Each structure stands twice: as structure tokens, then as C-alpha cells.
Image (cartoon, rainbow, N blue to C red; front, side, top):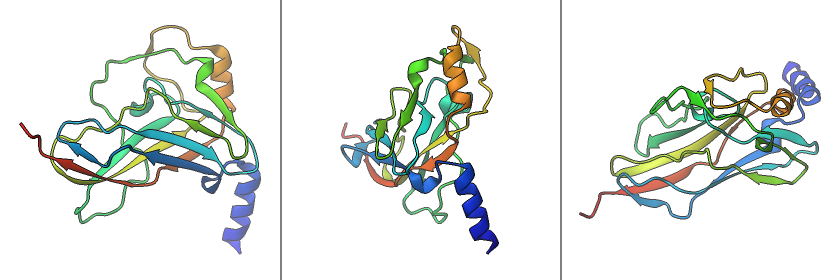
Length: 185
């Protein structure tokens, strides 16, 4: 009975529970060669009855410097530990310390049954060795996450205000199986 009460309470407090938002990863091919970047599309769909406000990934999202925090989990297909982590693995590779200014166009609202494709700051994984891999994408909108890094301009004040009122969510995409072949040199 406690868990049912907690679920109802969370439903009243949060308009976007995990089952209301769907994060879909699609790739044009599931076969790559070593050192080839994976390509595809990532779409969020609102299946809930209430509108939600979310944020496009931006400069610093993949290292946790701004919301949303995004990341990839890539696990060898035959690895004995089959579970992807609960939180997005952060990419600390190539951090420069700078962050592009956050703009109003990065904040969007999804009504019931609306979808939005995530944009250009999503950096897809690259595969340095051949094999078969299980891949998922993470999207975690954290409205009160403090923006870090050195801004390369002023953040839009209206955008920051909308972000503070955006919808908290933690999503993991569907899993894709990617086969990586050796280079044919």
C-alpha cells in the first residue's frame, strides 16, 4: 500500500514520469567499421497527458556542466555484466573549460503526443575496436543544475528562467546492437 501511495503522490507532483516520455534511438545502419562514428537520430516523445518543458543538449551537456546531462553507455555484447549504468557516463575527453552561451531556442515544450529530435550537440560514440556492442543514450533534465564552465558569451536570462521551471526527467533510450568490423585497408 505504501508504494501505491508513493506512486500517486509522485504522479501529482511530477507531470512527466518515466512512462510519459519516450527516448527513441534510431540508427541508419547497425554495422560500422573501426573508428567510425555512429550516426542516428534521438527523439523524445511525450506520451503523457500534460505538456512538458525540456532542454536541447548543449555545449557541456556530455560532461555534466549544464542541463540536460547526456551520455552513452557502450557495453561489449558478450560482457558478463549485462546492465547499463543507472546514470549517464560523462565524457571527460577533450574538455576545454569553455561553454557556449545558453539560448532561448534550446528550451522547448512538448504537448501530448508531440515529439522533438535532439540536436547538434549530441556527440555519437566512436568504436576503436571490432566487436558487437550494446548501446543506449541517456537524457537527464535537471532544472536546478548550476551551469558550470566559462561562458563564451552571456547566457540568455529568459532561457535560464525557463530551464529552472522545466520538467525533471531521467530517460534511457532503447538499446541498439552495433556490429563493428575491422578496417579493410
